[in-house]
Length: 373
Image (cartoon, rainbow, N blue to C red; front, top):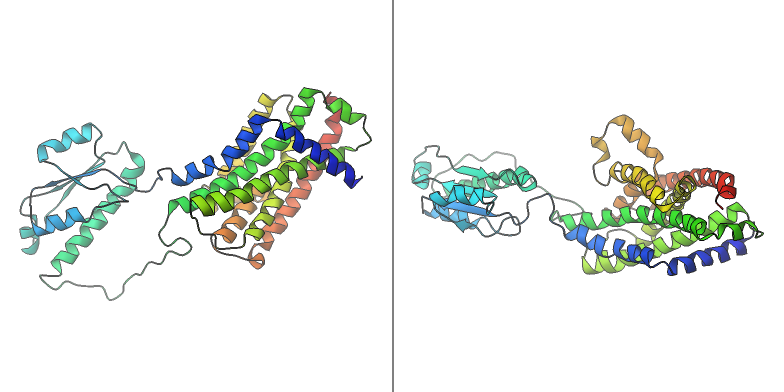
């Protein structure tokens, strides 16, 4: 093995990538528009929900309830009549319709238990599921605050103070941007290395490589470092200019430490990309294999669904996947400001998985390189 061979073969891969406009556009999109869209898309939580209110009481209390609904959770309430409520819900103009009955304030102060009707358009599942709780909490807090001005009410001796750490305002865009970037690191690492090998087969350059004084290890290592370097640089640029710059997501930990973990993740996933390319005979076949491998890696790594909610057997099985450890390390560093003393087990696991994946891919590459012509 000669390091100069690995270096110059890697430069050849970079030049080949520079002439592939499709791959360049994919890299640019994955680390710019895809991250921005994932961060700014309407989340499953309540966001600018349409609400209409039928105020049949027209009292200070009803006015107080109406004024409690405002952006960003709700749009400014539309005051409608009782006859308009059903037609607006049927037309899909409102997600929530709140009906405050006549003499609501008088009955409440008299000690009665009046009720308010809330109609929900359940076809908007994401907002309907969480919105009912939001509306109930808002109305209940406004009613309690209003009643306390007129008579003493029982207050529990213990109060609950909520403190959301690492994301005090529960801003969904912070999580969406970081997780999209993490997912795209894995996606691009597998796609670029696999496509580089298949591209050589389709262009007929494998024959030239076989007659050169280079070893399969040098060929594979050159693709790993070249494609890994491209993704790592793109990830660093996206983190600085898109995540921190455009989206203004605060990074709590060390960017250098995160990029170190990303480099270990790329070592494992670029090797996986070459392994998949040795089984595929064309880019369409490689794309199908990519779907079968990439979706489980991303869906079960803990980035989409917490690992604690998965079956224990599945949690144990996913410890063999590099994504699981990368997501754990990235979230700890970027969200919680963890140092190397907290994430070294994940770094060690990534290094070991990478070595095993590289060895398996190299063995498969050696056994099939002669059949790639």
